[in-house]
Each structure stands twice: as C-alpha cells, then as structure tokens.
Image (tube, rainbow, N blue to C red; front, side):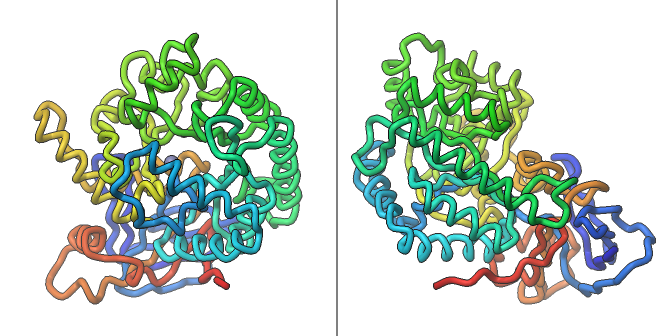
Length: 428
Ligand SMILES: [Zn+2]
C-alpha cells in the first residue's frame, strides 16, 4: 500500500471538480486506488505543495505521422493524405526507421503525461509489434492498431486481406504472451493490446471490412477508425458502399460499430441515424479539436454530443492535429465549443471541468477503470509542480486552470500508470 499526499484534483462527473487540499490517495499493490483521504497504513509519499491529477488519455493518434507534426497545414484532408501521410507511412517497412521515430513518439507522449492512448500504426506488422514492445517496456498503456487497407492508397501500404489477418493473429499472440509476463495479469488486462483498425471505409474493400469485423469478434478486440470527418469523404463512402444508410452503417454491417468497444475519430458531421446508432451501441467519439481547426473539415459539435448522451473523449490526431498535449487539447476543445456557441446560443460552451472530465474519466473509460481517483480505479496520475506559475494567492482550482492554460510538460514532475512510476523512455 502506498499513500500519495498532495493537493488532489479530479472529476467524478463532468460538472464539477473534486478538490482536496493536502489530501491523500491510497493505492494498493496492484496499482488500484483504495480511496481518497482514507487513513490506511502504508508507505507515505509526501509530494508537498504540488497538484496530483489523473493522467491524460489520447483517444486518437497516428504514431507514424509523428515526423509530419506541424507540416503541410495548407492542405485539406484528401490531398494531405496522398502527398504527405502515405509517403511517410511507407517508410515504416524499415524497422530501423520505425524504431528511431517510434521511440521519440513514445518519449513525447510520456513528456506530456499521456499514459494511455489509442494508436494508429501502419500496415507493417513488424514495426507495429515493435511499437507495442516500446509501450510495454515503458510501462505505458496503449491500444495499438495495425492499419488495414487494401484499396485507394499507394502500393507499399496495401496488403491482401489474408496477410492482414495473419498479421493481427501474430500481434494477438504476442500480446497474450506479454500478459502472462506481467505480475497482475490474472486480474488486470494487459496494458498493451492490439486494436482492430480499418483505416476508413475508402481504403478497405468489403472483404477487408468483413475480415476486420471477424477479427474483432473472434479475439474480442476493440475497434477504431475514422467517421464523418469531411463532406467529400462522406460522399465517397456513400458511393463505395451504396447499400449503407449512413457512413456509420457502412461499419456496422461488418461488425465494426460497437459490437466490441469502438472509438471513432472526428464525427464532425454525424447526425440523425448515425448519431442514434452510436448512442445505441455505446460507440465513443474521439474529438480532435486541433485537427478540426487545421484540416478545415468542420468542427465537431461536442456540446450536442454530450446533450445527446454520446460517450466522448479527446484525441490529438497527430499529424492532422499539431499538438501532442492532451492538457492543451482541453483548451482547444473549450475554444472550439465557444465558436459553436457564437453560432448558436442554445448550446453552452464547454466548461473547464467538462473538458478535464473528457480528457480523464470519460476518455479513460475506453481502457477500463481509468481516469479518476475513485476506489477501484487504476492509479494513473500526474504530479504537477506549478511553482513557476503560482506566484500569488491562487486557490487550488485557479492553480489547476492556470496550469492547463499556461503550463506544459515542464511542470509534470512525476507520472504514474497503473500504480507504477513511469520514467523517461529512451530515444536513439
Ligand atoms: Zn486520424
């Protein structure tokens, strides 16, 4: 048992923060929270006048686009894919290149306090397995997707369906072997697992989509993809899948829309039947506000999603998004919702506690009991030393708000995932 003493801030519900001045979080030997402010006996770790908050969760990020972060922002979605994304992803056939880039990527997720993420890798099985190994070695949680695609993209990135299935089976067996090596594998799911990842309908033939749905069902794997980001894309999907009643239905008919836990990035234009289907199936939205602003495909109406009862978390969407920090993503999510508010005063903009909840407890729910300090939650946490920002008589909530708006990775002095302190991963 370990007891962490600090100023504790987290959200049990979207509308308000829980704030404990000089509180403590008790964590058991399996890395789970026993209670907040409880009087258990154990080793006390006194963190002094620092803030202790849940760690960040990124629900949508493309690891092989890490090199393109901050590039090609003058292009819209489809030319951007053809000219920048696909040529870069081809390089991941070279495992040496993949290792150099992926190590930096994992190290930077660590820097910004992201302890769990949903990742798109590339088609290449070997470099995808390498990325899973790097997360495993770092001790950080990740659902890693070997990207399935067999049409409408350049040679070197497509793969026959049979090979994709074999690749996934290889990753599943790798992941189950790792599970046996972790000390608490009997009670907790492995930190690093594959996630079924059809890139999006335009790059997957019906045969590929069907195989993806079968893989998800057979191995009970979660699913991720892109949905209704861009109007040209939606029109294209309607042409390719003429039987489908909406873009979401084009996934649903292949078992890729909530039959196992599913997260869909963007959903900018999701409405009507698609929205109802997502609600019914518990399909989660990965809202990527910087990507919405950069790629100019439109801005997802998050307040509407919350009013409708959809599950929502935040994603950085590197490199459609330019910023890996989920802390800053809260600010962008609030700002995007204020732009919606300017158009329509019936729907209020997001508050700080709501954005914080989206990034922590709501997004964390995709990984299990993650993102809060309530009893039974896995202890994923960041220790924030905001002394350089805390130069007057600020309340604890004001200190947190200033950290979210003004801080960066330099104020994060400790990071924990599932109760373990995570040290800086090595780069080469
Ligand atoms: Zn994406």
